[in-house]
Structure formats: structure tokens, C-alpha cells
Length: 519
Image (cartoon, rainbow, N blue to C red; front, side, top):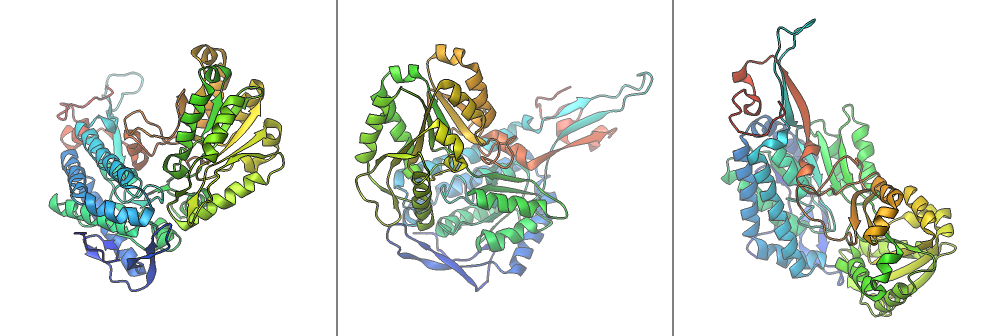
């Protein structure tokens, strides 16, 4: 490994000198402790990071889009330069395989470049122009021009299940930096070494592109201690979070209780329901079961889009269930990201299995080892499903609950579900047309509605919505993936009766940036 690991926070361009240990990485599956020991940022260092971010904001937010785009592209290049270090350390800290880590690295650098392209083109600012009309009766019309401007410094919490794409330089950081917001990252205890390698790359990129110190800091010390202190700090103007419902709602409460409340964009919990209509089964129940099993067990089920709930018409799908049972029993356990996630999977599946009316359709015949999870499928009638809200809870891992009922009962049950990241419908086009109420119910409950596909796999693009009504996210009007995610860290500002030379270039009469505007 060419990147030295020091076990300390990044306070702007300086390293922390804190001496309070906050933990070490632990190799999943073996329990081996990985050096170095990581140390918590001190309260004074947190304050220093906040002061640097506040000082950097007016400078960074007023840098040209081309300059900020250059910074994002430099981050991508610096990260690509340490890919081997990231893979080496990442496999130890997360039990993720090399292909998964390299693929996630490509997603991370790809979205950095995607945002660079977005802000360089410039139309994302939603420029609107209403010119003055002094002769309008009975009241003259003033000149008004508006566009989006960055909120201010943003706190970003790293995710456990995506050590790259939703962590130090992941989507939250990339979109906030693109908008013009300095970022303060709270590293995740599960992969501190990967965080340090990536943080070093970002800091190098910031220096190479002459960004102000404080545009980026990374703090160790945990979400409950350092993270809460950061969210409470008046400098921070928004929060990006991917993780548990308990963690997200705790941050929401903290942010709401500030003298100046701020938005928390938290992606938290989703069971991603799949509704199966008879026409989909007629195409081949074995093939459908095989495809579903692949989605269920992808990445040991550790995706926020894992299909944890299936609605199956009563009297249909016996072949699907039989094939799924055989696949689950012949499946293999997989090592999870950390011991806490593995324990949570054991506890949540045990809780679901103990609910009256729930039957265990199948469990993997191979016993799970240390920090491992094995596939499991449970079945329940829709009557019993509706009796117990626990059955809507996420089993984070390779487990799903199949609910059987009439199509009318299924449509009604879908309308009563909690908010979801995704909802899928497997049917024929004729069934799709005949069940418009069901389609409405699905789109009413989810941020992304899928036809004849599976929710795992999130395309990073302009039209992706990775969000949904609570508790899938804290704000169902937002997305944490794709170019729409930049809008979380902006606010609209109007300029009234300003001289042309004093306006931002995006709003000047000659449109020097040649962007799309509403005029």
C-alpha cells in the first residue's frame, strides 16, 4: 500500500492531533483487528473544521463552474490513482470482493465527472428572468431574476454498505461540492482505512486546483459524538445521510431542534415491494424465481433496494415458490459488512419468523458462519400481514416475505405501506392497463416504479430518483442519486432591479454562459 494510514482526521489541510482512541477497523468473518488505531477529532478540532468551512464558503461558492468542475475531475483522477490501495484495504474492512469494489469505484468517479459536466453546462441553476415593464398599468413591473444558489457548508455521513459511492467522495459529497458547498464528512467506523485513503485523494485534488482550505474535512469519532456536534453547529446548513432509520431520525431530531433548523436528507429504510400478477408467472415461474433469487442475494442482500416483500396472487405461483425454495436451500451464506449488521439480520429474521401466521418457506441448508447471513424466505397470508406492522420492517440482508392475497386485497395493502425507495410490478402490458389503480398505489408509495424488473441496481443518471416517502427518506421530494441530488443543497434567490453588471453571469442580459433560461 502506497497511502500511509495515520488514523487521524483531516481538518482542512491539516491532520488531527487528537489522542482519544475511537476504534479500529475489524475484518468481517475473522474478527481480526486492523491497524492503525483511529483517534477522535477533539472538540477544538471540530470547531476548527467548522471555522474553515465557513471561511471557505464565500470563496468556493463564487468560484466559476469551470473551476469547481476542474476540482471534481481532479478528485476522480486522484481516486483512480489509489484504486489498488482502496481495493486492498476495502476487502479487509468490508468483506466485499475485488470486482464489487472496483465497480463501486467506477460509479464514484463517474458521478464526480457527471456533476462536473452538469455544472460546466450550467442550466441546472434554473435561471428565470422577468424583465421590467415600467409602463404596465396600474402598477409598473420591476425587473426580477432568480436562480439557485448553494446553501452553505454540508455535513455528510458515510454509509456502511457503500464504502465508496455513498461515503467520503460519494454522491452526497459530489453533489454538495458541485453546488458550491464545502463538505464536512463524518467517517464510518466500519471502513476507516478506505475513508482515509479517499480523503487523502480529495485533499490532494483540492490543493492541486487551488481550492480554499476548509472546502473539505473528514472527521473520525462516530456519529453520536462528533457527528451530532457537527449537525448542531450553526455553520452547517444541511445534512446528507445514508443508514438506519434510528440513525436518520436521530439526526432529523437534532437538526430540527437547532435555533436555526436545517434540512436532513436521510435515506433510511425500505422493503421495496414487488407485486406479481398472473401474466408474469405464465411466462415461466422457474425463470422468474431464478431472477428474483439473484436480486435477493446480490451483495448478501446488503442493498437499500433489496426486494424484501413480494405480493403474490392467492392460488397462483406455487411453481415460483417451489423453485425459490430449492434455490434458497441450495444457496450459500455470505459474509456481511460487519458484525453489527450480521447480528441485526439474525434478530430481524427471527422477529419476522415469530409473528403469528408467518411460515418459514425455506432457509439455506448451510449454516452461516461468523458475521455471515444465509438466504431465507417467509410466507404469510395478507390477512395476517395486515394485522402486524412489524411485517413491514426491513430485514437488511438476503431475506424476503411473500404475502398472498387477492388482487383487490393486494392493491389495498400497497396503499397502506410505508414509503419505499422502489416498487416493482411484474405483469403483462394488458394487465398493466387493466390495473391502473394498482399502478397508482405503487407510485404513491415509492420514488421509483419498475415494470418487469428488479430494484437492485441504481443507474446514476439525470432521471434517476433514489428517494421516496418517509421512512424510505426524510424528504420524499429529493433524490440522493443522479443529477437531481444537487438540488438538495441549494436555495432559490431573486435579484430585483439590479444593474446588469452586478448580476451573476447566469442572469445577465447577454446570457454570456449560453445556458437555458426561462424568459
